[in-house]
Image (cartoon, rainbow, N blue to C red):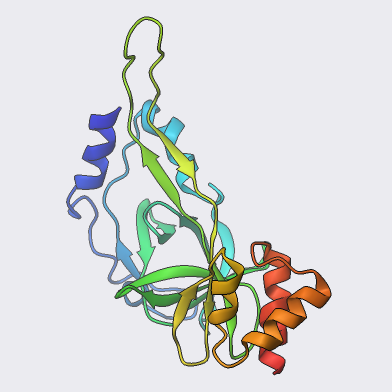
Amino acid sequence: MKKIFIAILMLPALAFSQVGGITTGSGTSYNTIFNPNTEIDKSEEFKELAPKMYITTSYLAANVDDIVETFFLRYNMYRDEMEFSKNDQLLYLKKINDRTIVFQNLNTKYKLFELNNDLKYFIVHNEGKNQLLSRQTVTYQEEKPPVNSYVAGKKADFIRNDDIFYIKFDNNSIIEVPSNKRKFYAIFDGKESEIKNYMKSNRLNNKDLEDLKKIVTYFNSL
């Protein structure tokens, strides 16, 4: 299984032809929106493992930026890519800073922001000048053979990680939410005491999604 998976990651992007000439219903060329992806391994072993790379294995209706047409996408957490299938080609949505993807039925908004000099997909949890974001990720766990007859081995697998929360401040800096409360107060430069008092009076936890939404919304009101 390990060899199969590595082969998938190392395949050159030659298996698919270019997507030029295909147009959306609104007349937009697909090659301005998507990049061709490498060929997907269709072995039974990979089929069993692959679904764990995705939030949902189905392609769901989504809006991209201000493009009129609805696209059917799915988010690949492992590769951090939005996937699209067209004419038996698997395509990746091109990454552009501030690009917005809204999944209609999930009522979930993703945006592309730069983190550590690389564009990453974040879920946006609130509107306003300062935004609460989160990242969804999985880690690939390689196959582990049995140590001996008493210790069983482990199959290769994708392990879902806890979501990581960030705050995007109005100066465009993106800071990971600290778990330590003292460090958490400190990221609200100049408003530490207000945030501390608000959290204490409302019994809010900086590790809880709903509480973090309230904190960032309050911060936006200051």
